[in-house]
Length: 203
Length: 315
Image 1 (cartoon, rainbow over the protein chains, first blue to last red):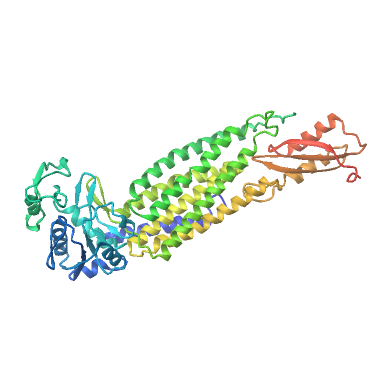
Image 2 (cartoon, chains in turn cyan, yellow):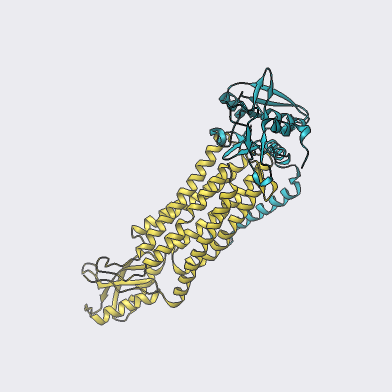
């Protein structure tokens, strides 16, 4: 191997440059999904694996309620998609996600979930102290994940935190996750209102 | 015990060595910023984690070089009568092992990822309030991580040749591996952005084969050097100093025949010289002349023991 700029060193540099140029011109609709999740969901069906995990997501017959359900419903609307809720066990859902049989799992997950290496995790949609609440998505579907992340970042985030499961959520005072954004405290009904898409007016 | 005389580099080489030491300090400083940049952008990406570990490993050759640079010119002592020149070879061994492990790790990681069909997941990041796809940040960090090793590696290579320093050569090779891997990482993440989940692993795998090849070649070379084989150049070709040394001594008017051997001790050559004087007498003055003739061939020839050729070989 020669020390000066040898033939193949220079070729690698040129190839990298050409690739960067090609991407810069085409980067509008990037990243793309290997398994085409975003294209399939758009004007189609969003397959959500749901786990009954109050107060984050609550089973209500075949329907879902709670902040995660509201979040997913609002996201699906931006894609013109219908939500197909599938209720089941957490690990079964995660395995289905790995096999691309689901698009999203909503189970009151936080960023610390041990499944983080196997599936994709969204940006936190809610932060409380060291808990960052996330949704799980199919691994490597970066276009779909980025669309979800952009939706989470773009909406007026519910910066307040519901009480932990088991406590009376009705009138509990909750503290602000991001005090720098000026939200001192809110009650659970206020959070519910804030999460509703029709209440999403930018302050 | 008789210790060896100390060894001093020629003034021009001394300047080269100081420059090499400065380059190695610059390498350590630059790699600290690189490691920080990769750490901040890697998120949950396994490929970036591999790139981070490889950047951490690239601290080994510069540190080995700097330690060896401090130790190698220490005068021989009672306890170490042969001096400390081998410190350079030991540092080179450490560098070669690091290079091999680094390549092997990347190779394993990329084959593993391909076999398990791991799709690298890269989501959105927020930089100063602006949402950016994490892949673009990774590409920026990887491009940045490739620049210092690209420049420093090309500055080190000629110095390694002039100083006959194989640790510096191993480090320059490591720098080359660093920027090639950064380039592969960029190609891989770019491929991922196009929906090719396998692009990252394939790019890293191809490069890692080259790195493992370099590492094993270096490792074999230093092990052979430590086995006192014939001296070689930093590029692995057989050095012609032993032949030239014997010729130079044979050219002395009182020498009928000369023979000898050299080994590498780090960046210097040491060995034995056997002379067959035409009148069979080796005086102290003649021994000195023979030693001077040998050293005049190259600055690296040092500490030559001059003795009479064994009777069965002498003519």
